[in-house]
Amino acid sequence: MYTLKKSLGQHFLKDEGVVDRIMEELMKRPFSRLLEVGPGAGALTRRLVNLPGVDFRAVEVDAEKVDYLRRTFPMLQERLIHADFLSIPLPFSDPFVVIGNFPYNISSQILFRILEWKDHVPAMIGMFQKEVAERAAAREGSRIYGVLSVLLQYYYQPEFLFSVSNESFIPPPRVQSGVIRLTRKETLFPVKSQRYFTTLVKTAFGQRRKTLRNAVKSLFGPEHLAERMFDRRAETLSVEEFAQLTFNML
Image (cartoon, rainbow, N blue to C red; front, top):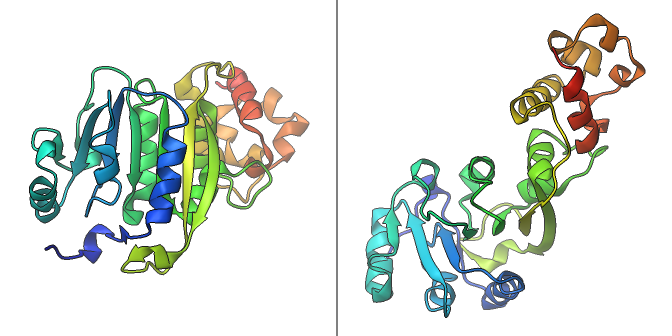
């Protein structure tokens, strides 16, 4: 029927109980357009393709899986995009929800892609390697709190929904998995600009073991670097504190 490609990070969901839980979370909020990323063998697709009143599309990079999906779900013919999710243009002109059992080898890249599309994606529900899922929802003070955490949490409210055993997949991955939801915030913390905010966060965590004073010294004048705030390290600052700091940047 199809082969599994390790190079594409393919681990196909087989546990119907997990599918049920994902669908339950998806249906908690209304939506009219839905994009599934990496449908693979169609464990989620068979539930999504016939949702009433929903414009459903899926994107799959593996030609073999595209052929399998089109044969298995004839109604997908014009709704299946054969391409790399990381390189496609916006699949809808209006807002849409994203869902998927995402390939683990590009987990972080997928989340950064969602950030690029933040004005068009009000919500996302997805399965990731548990480490990535936890990092997305990590709070300040955590050792896994970093660039991804701060940038996601500026624009979205992340929720770690539940863990998934590696025995729920074919073949079982070596790591545990987690399902998260992102819900776009209606109100954002004020910043000097979003570009300044992104630059500050990436620079601060680029040398996370150093104090802010040493890590971001190129972005601030000496009068601000003398403040006690700069004695701290990046992982101790909240999203709001990063936002406030942008107003003092050069």
